[in-house]
Amino acid sequence: MTDLTLLTLAEAKEGLAAKSFTSLELTDAHLAAIEKARVLNAYVLETPDQARAMAKEADAKLAKGENGNLLGIPLGIKDLFATKDVRLTACSKILDDFKPPYESTVTSQLWRDGAVMLGKLNNDEFAMGSSNETSAFGSVVNPWRREGSDAALVPGGSSGGSAAAVAANLCLGATGTDTGGSIRQPAAFTGIAGIKPTYGRCSRWGIVAFASSLDQAGPFARTVRDTAVLLRSMAGHDPKDTTSVNREVPDYEAAVGKSVKGMKIGIPKEYRIDGMSAEIEKLWTQGAEWLRAAGAELVEVSLPHTKYALPAYYVVAPAEASSNLARYDGVRYGARVNGKNITEMYENTRAAGFGPEVRRRIMIGTYVLSAGYYDAYYLRAQKVRTLIKKDFEEVFAKGVNAILTPATPSAAFGIGEKGKADPVEMYLNDIFTVTVNMAGLPGIAVPAGRDSQGLPLGLQLIGRPFDEETLFSLGDVVEQAAGRFTPKQWWG
Image 1 (cartoon, rainbow, N blue to C red):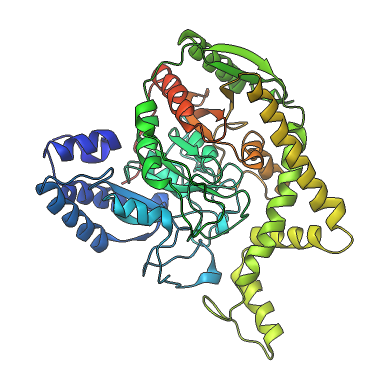
Image 2 (image 1 turned 120 degrees about the vertical axis):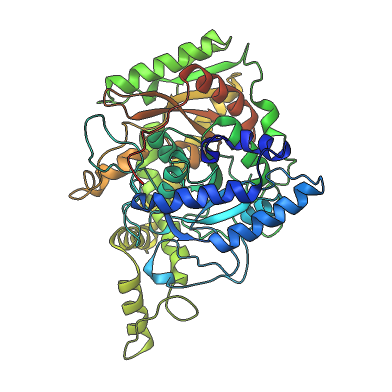
């Protein structure tokens, strides 16, 4: 029998259906792999007992001939999703040992379809970060290394634990959230696929909020097909989330392998930024050629407000964060640091509970929402956001089916290499991804090549609202042309 952790999610589904192995065997193989890979710090909580119980339940259903979209498939869950009676921290000290008495809608749908939970995955504190270095549990280590070097690299953020776990074969798929690129950037840094669906496609209920008008859940997996399988279970209308859209969930997997002949793909000239590495430029050109070879038509398009996206995002997101994070006060749940009165208790709790990046963003957000600055910053940023959305609408109105861009400005960088002296240096990692969140569009990152040091690089495809199917079809073309990338195992 092959090592069960090397299977794709689709292959594991086939193996379970053919009774080549059981869900318990599949789960045990992944639990053993997780134990050997603790040096990667991908999991902040392992749940082996619960995993085995869920696997046994799945095996009983499989034996009866029952089926579910994910029956018996072991997954990792980003520690931003509420999991009933299982610790939820958002990788922050302020939530302490909080065990929610409820389940997030997304995870409840995964369990409904028979998935198995292996544990909770590391992320940047409250999803605020582009490298997974702000977690209270410490940095996640990318399973990839530069050729000839054993320097530890970041896996990207905020969903770095999810990306590292999938790339290192520690789960068959994982959940992530994407507020400004937190699925697509780590997917590109670790050589896997990750999709941020259209805003409203997946329920946000039971997910710790960062910026409510930008946050969206999505899946990570080793192939485009596997992300399609996962998104089918994760998506769907939820009356508990007023931003959740009541639309039928398509069979995303059916879109994988479909012809892309005649599709019009936009290449935005504004994404050719100053200082872009020659390797990224070459990869982008190569991706366009692959799509052309598959029968797609390439056209240059203009998204003129792109240059304002990053500054506008770093006004809107912290503003919403400062409002959302006001609930962490030490009164009802989580950590509490006492003081001589309630105000001091609030101050002490928040000072001790929040890390420096979260404090920075709360302060920025509170400032831009304050009297005298609201019009100058927040209101202006929202107007820019409307213009960014309009840019995309105009491009799609001209018959463009999707837009091809790089996913990141570089390959993964070393832990501690960026953002120490100047936080803006770290924020620039989101330059290709934030526009998609500002406009509420779907975006997929697909591994497309490697740089001169052997590290994976990704391309991004941006789609029309609720047209994830086109992204799966196009993403599959890129994936088939580029081949799959796996890191050499140096851990365990």
